[in-house]
Image (cartoon, rainbow, N blue to C red; front, side, top):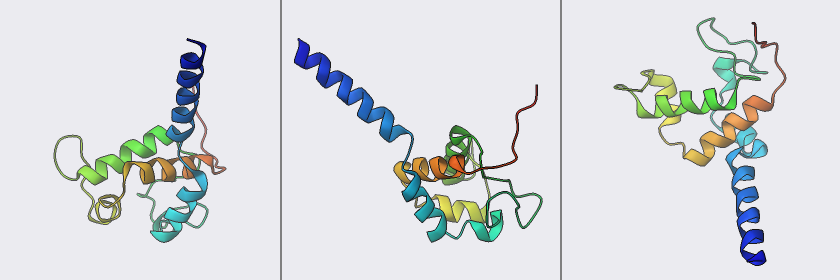
Length: 113
């Protein structure tokens, strides 16, 4: 019984560690896809005011947005030719990694009450 409990605990720790994404891989992916060309070198100053600031954004929001671009037009999807082209080939792991990296960046985003 003790071995089973240890195995379950180790499995849970392993799953929670991977659920957060790999920041280093996320950094490599945003460089590979040249995200900074639209969202700015430090991801806080986009080249167009309609493009979101990504640095410090909540990881869950970023994952949701990338998955919606991956879905494309239709229910629960987002229709943008540029973002759709970048998001469609991404695996769920890559989406987690990108979200973890962007979330880890310093930013001026603040929550207001």
